[in-house]
Length: 331
Image: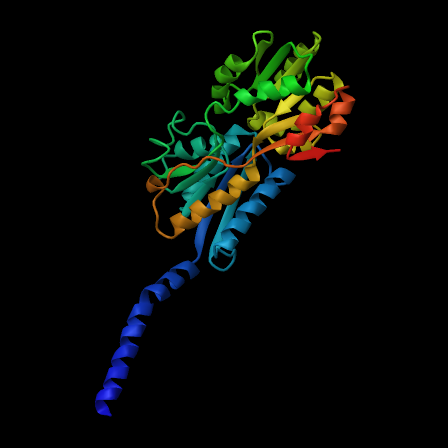
């Protein structure tokens, strides 16, 4: 009887020891963690920004991170103000969070310019290697990793789509901000256009530049526009959409929220889904993994959105083939 009791006590002891790592992980998870969030271009009250952050928060919650219980999120939204962007980057780094989420390339670069060693996960970076943010997509090698905006050369699809929805097009103006890294897609886009189509590069650095660029394209017939949507274009997207309709210019955008606001057509990655993916990388970092070992991911979900109301206002008939391919048609 005594031997039996000792054996049972021994089994209980071993079982308890095996549970220690699980208990330790649970205690670690319950310790309050801090996540910094820096998003350039959008403002805190922007509906698109709220939609993306909701996806980020849901992603964290699905992985066991609950605000107020085991995680605290500090958000900073500098809009299109570069001075505030740099100030907010320094402010977040100074809080010494466990990880930082950089919502786009401008935010990521601003954080890296603070010489921070805080693990950082980015979204919406068009070419993280060329930007000097990672050593390679497979082995980032530093304190930064994340989700790239799209595959290299992706912009070549835009000219084809624009010509299909507006077949009379003979000139395509490409609106881009020279301070935004998305301009690296410009040579690939220009090479992909038909020889019958003239490409016009429209460098913009201010609201007035945007107005001048659109008016320039409207001065001659059969023109169209493609917007490389950096922080400037995002901040003034309502102006761009209004002027494009006013001058009856077919205009293609890379993101859904432009088309939902009245743009003609958009084709690009699902940015809301990217924020969800970022949450999974933040989770892995909070659980002890290093950004250096987490490969840069590329989006797997792309969306073609067509606004029929805008097409009618521009006098365009959208081909049935294009409507059949669309992920969403806005009436």
